[in-house]
Structures are given as structure tokens and as C-alpha cells.
Length: 122
Image 1 (cartoon, helix red, strand yellow):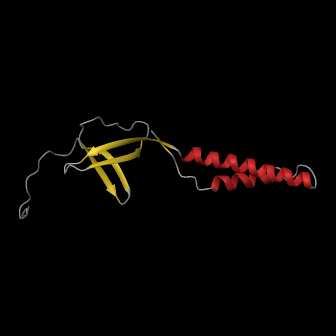
Image 2 (tube, rainbow, N blue to C red):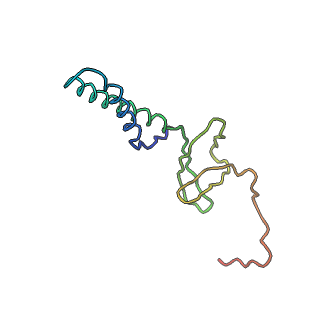
Image 3 (cartoon, rainbow, N blue to C red):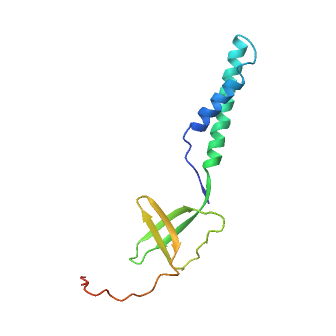
């Protein structure tokens, strides 16, 4: 799955500026203005495409059924060497604000003893 990055417009502005400057010495009079405008337009398009390509990433989507029965979907970046989880494999979800990540739960116990002094109320 591809994760499409957000285009901020900075690439277009930088590309347009560079294109306009590159064409500023071409022609004279109205020909010079046309060359500059053409350079700005082409540079802006190339800059926007370059920014978009740099912000796109490869990702994976997990649909997870939690212990309480609730089902959630998490899309996360997938770097080379990241483990891909299979169906029915135990995982844990790391969450902080809007950030969520699926991690292996191999090292987590299936059961724990109730801590002393804790009263469980149902």
C-alpha cells in the first residue's frame, strides 16, 4: 500500500523561483517576460512533483480486533526489514495522541498475577 504524503506547496514555490531565475536572461522585452513566466510555470510543476515524490511512502494496513471486541484499522509506514504480522498473530498497539503503531506482542505474558492491595470492581 502506498501512503500519499501531504504536498505543502514549498516545492512548487522553490521550483517556480528557480525556473524564473534560470530563464531571466533569455530573450529581450516581451520575449524575456514570456521566458520568465514559462520558467516559473515549468519550475513550479517540477518542484511540486518532486516534493510529492519525496513525501510518498510505503505502508501497510492492519485491521485489529482488540481484546474488548472493538475492531480498529491502523495504517503505518513500513521500512525495509520491518516485520509484517500475519492473521491471528498477537500484537500490541502503541498509541500516543494521533500516533499509532502495531508492534509484536511475543514478549508480553498471557496472564499476570493480581497485584497485592488492588481491588477489582466489575
